[in-house]
Image (cartoon, rainbow, N blue to C red; front, side):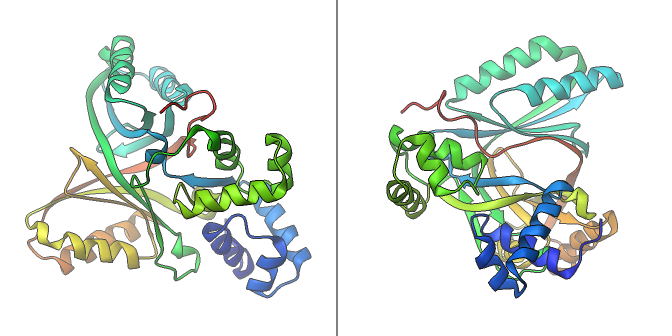
Length: 320
């Protein structure tokens, strides 16, 4: 779906700060508040904006993020649909992508311990072993979120998950609310938690300062605006180019994530582009920038996103 310049500017600003008010947004993009409110409503109704979330550093709450790749064998379309639903219904799952390329399903799963994940994996293999040819498991060390500058922005800011310190239990209910609805007004949050507006505001500011809450963003459906999602893994001949690759990611408008994981490839990043040809242009650009230094590369394309959320329910699972 093609968007005009005003829509793209609205998405750009909500990608940077989903808690921005309509008045502030109108002033920033130089249109009336009524126009902004109407356009945002239209983007929501069309599914281009699928909600708003607070990006929370899960490590600060004692969670590990584990990545699971699954390859099928001996399946039918019905069995594959059942397996995808199994992962999507899992309370701990963060993302579930149906993919093509190096795997058939890609999942992100939040757990409190390696043992908890092992229990999940064992249960999965008991249920579906005969339909799985291979699994790959990686523990995420850091996950860098980049702004969607392909919408028209030029901000090289990024948000790094996996570096904050564990906080206490008193903030859990607030985090639980804001993680699933980042535009919830302070008065409504306070009413739900039995706090004043000033107390709610103070707690949010403290969580932001401590980098427990990293930012507030809109869930922008890349498919609805004509973009495709690719995850890239590079194995390097020369690891000295990693810092240069990081600079490339930070400056490229189509790079949306950089992944750092135990057991993963030497360098990993994600892009959202308009076509496979545009994706290959990025790969070829890297090959030209770093001749004979990239040993090989592989990728998957997200054919369909079956689940995408940014935090498990905290109220029922938090413990120090």
